Length: 516
Image 1 (tube, rainbow, N blue to C red):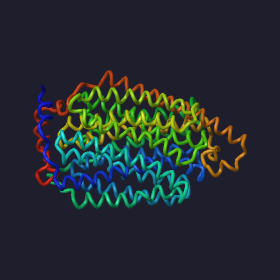
Image 2: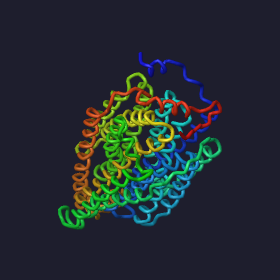
Image 3: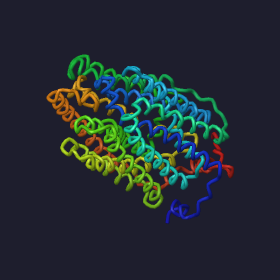
Image 4: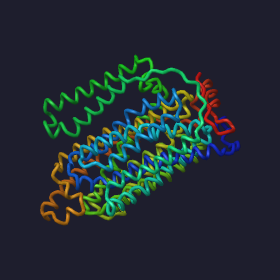
């Protein structure tokens, strides 16, 4: 029996009162992010139907994902410098303000801008939440708690689509944003009053140049994918030029990160096989995850003529499978290691996306629910496992950066994937078919025009779904070829093991942090 499995057999210490209270606050913060994501996805078809601008559909999601993605490494560096508490409180504040402004939007442009502001807050909420968990719990407890937190995400996401569909059909879509306000205030209050950190502050340099380069590269790539092809043609000189500049900016960013004193993304972490494999798998999984939440509702509500509640129920099925997979992963990780769980999870992504690719042929809502639940189960198994083993591979002063990279990989995949798929969908449907997504507008539209819009929407979504299939197959192939067979804590070097033990909470439940 290995040392890791021998340690796993020893009884866990009891959870302290302070740990329990902070855990509740973190659960509320995670629920906030999950609630927003699932509610917005359900309400968006109706929002597009009322505000117009189907061509801007993907930007409501990508604006959020871009700002939340590019800000994650900055927040992670700040959290490793000044502590987790001030960073997560700032993120929650920005998120709540952005949510309130989204509810007052009167145009798609305003909504996109305010969603970008929301994303700036979200960049701190989820990764720093999971980092705090890594601080206040020792490794074996952490695996189970991370699974529980992923389950909280799933439960919130289950209720989110149903609540979003109900609100959109009754009091209006604006309330899907305003509901974030009380949840965010509650989470900030609990964390603010109960999380007590002991850190030795050390001056760090924030890589603002890297952040600007990365943001510019991502935005230009998304503009190329979503707008340039339709405006100039996919093989035109302007489109190719924009793509070349985007690639050049990415290359410049990588070169800059290699020489920066304290880079935005610590490329040195990629030397660890588990980190390298996990981030690659997470990027492709992010395309699938955000693709499902973004592009399944238009199929249910636009092509099959369902209600916002129907669209919410379909997406909620993914959130049912996710917590199940997370709980299972958290419990069996210590016995099986990470590789088998990730292989099963990515295989389920393939199964789920193949089923989703057939949504245009099968109208029953139950079929969409089964397909989405398979994706959710696969995400729960793979994402929870990758997060825990990557956190265990680094010391305290790099854990926030590593956790941020996990979130970064998934959201960058989602941002780029949703943007590219949005450009493809617009090319098929055009921007004049918004009425097909609004249940009220459908009742007054010309039947022939409505059917033509449904057919083009179905064709475009079919191509989008096959892109998701390709990404799921890629994630499985990467897991087979690159995922090492690691046990919990096995990948830590001796010096890092000592730092890991220093991060175990004191009897009071405080997060004790030490700089080397």
